[in-house]
Image: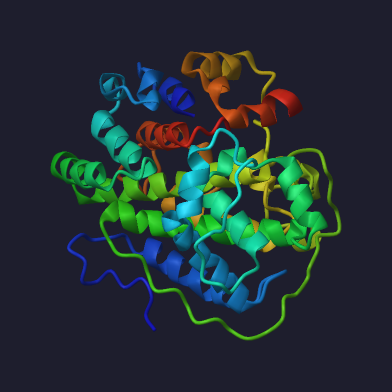
Length: 120
Length: 247
């Protein structure tokens, strides 16, 4: 979806931000590095890093951005657990576009890829 | 009790978030399709216990989660098998298998009850995670409401994906007409449809935390959000990656 939204707005982004590279996250995305660190520290359950990331994000981007970022991060803490607890496959495994992104990010290294690679 | 009152918090939080959370808390306390109100609140409590469970921490480090025995740290309200399911969903979700869900179903935890349990666990967890992200303490769980589960089962189900039956994409009709536009539903929307109310909860909470289903079609920026879609998807992607979620 990051690639699709970037294409829609004709923005040059680097998907490696998804894998935790701060410079990549900042490319084409306002507050990208700070948003990435905030999301990462939440998902990693690193409370010290989370406190630091929260403070940084609030300082550079403001309260409203922090609230909306917290909402999205919390939402995807739920979504990943729905997907894996039910074992659903990815919707469009036949798409070359989708496959190229999965390859670029190395997503098949994840155990849950089996739900899509077997069923898809 | 007035749940999710952020009025004293130093940061202004848009009103739809506490309103949605409070509405979910009201639903959580009531009997569901397959669990009583007391059981639903107990499932919610186990999502929190999972985070400090010593056995979960040990199992998470094991090469395989199925070769290690032990007992969970839990409140003692729910059967061990149910506790195990909740704790896995929170702490080790990407190693849940079809065999585990089938074994649970053969030993008293039906697939429908499992789906409702998943819905409760992930929704409570995500609301708690919002609080943790903001530096807020978690909300007190609601007092259960007495009553019996409805045992409602959707009439049209298929077993074409995942570990449990779901409503097919074209099957959102009649009682389920509000779940999605018939003929088109991403797998993650269909995932919990064995328990339609779990999908409804999914819509409501996702609509406040992220985007509504129609809003997801807007790849630029929702007018009610301060971050654009690229910023949202960067956050979503990083959270998914840390959780090692392929989907």
